[in-house]
Length: 434
Image (cartoon, rainbow, N blue to C red; front, side, top):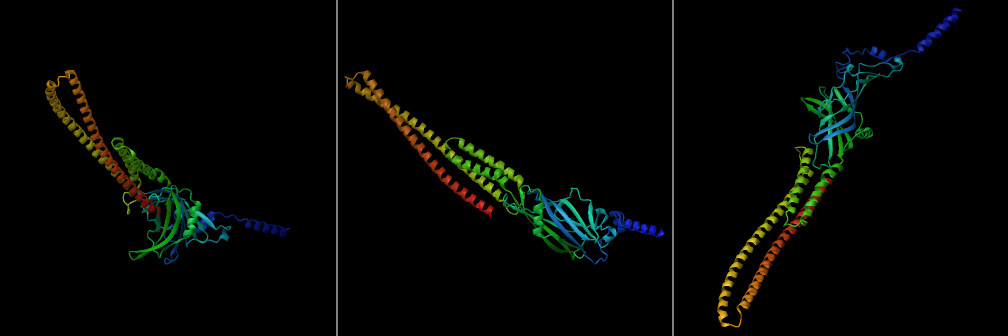
């Protein structure tokens, strides 16, 4: 009976031991991980200071939040993964029910002092408060970051431009013999992952994410950096519809204004209105483009040249209007001069007719005074009509001559204007496409 009870006790004891319960806290207690234990967070986690800490870094582009040309600012939202080895941490998963990793607060362990060189504003997005710790000492930190970085942008071909912005990551105090940076993914894999997880691009089309390693020497020490280059292309449709096409429409209206008569004031007012509309678009462009650039943006050249051509067209219209007004004044003066000469001639003719009548009346007694007076009136009316016709013919000839040379000036300038505009637009669009 005692033997059977002993066997039952052994069976129940083994069954209880096979159902061992483990927790993450058991691993934490085994490692002696506490918030006030400085062994794990004060110094670089190596047993021999000559050993380098290998940090594997992976960055994936999650969204393009903003690309601001005016301030040369690039704002991406990225997913950062860092992995390194802590030589002070290890445990046997078999002793802890197969637990291979645990999560602990970030403040409990040492972390690489990595920073972004181009970052100009502190990240205010919420961070992941935990890190993964594996049984072999591999520490994994994953976090999302909103990076407000400076980027040297080339806006020469705006809005058909392609921008390349860098994010350079390096250590603040550790040299290359203490801390090494290695990319977890190559350029093609990082590009593929970024395209798969990307949520927002705005007016930009993401093209490529390239990764390069760069070492530099400062103060006789060598430092290692990883450079992530984001290549993106602008979608120009919005700028073409809101900016480039309206300027072409205004240019077409300015060309069409050559069919308006020069002797009216509508042509001059129309050209001034179109020029003011171009000025408003130039003010809008000034708010988009940066104040300084290595090369003059093609869109600025496009607007300035068209503005200059329209200004030249306005000056040509002013010149033709001035010359026509000057001709009209000279015609008026000549008309007044002709009238004065006509009055003098009429006075002379009246005097001579009176003398002739006085001489002829005594000789020819057969013609009655009443009939002679009527004949003299008819003769005077015929002379007046002849002078009026001559005056109108001279004025019409002068107007015809002034209108003729004004039409010639307009035709010559119109041909020159269309030729220059065609050549310029061809060159500017070829430059945009190359």
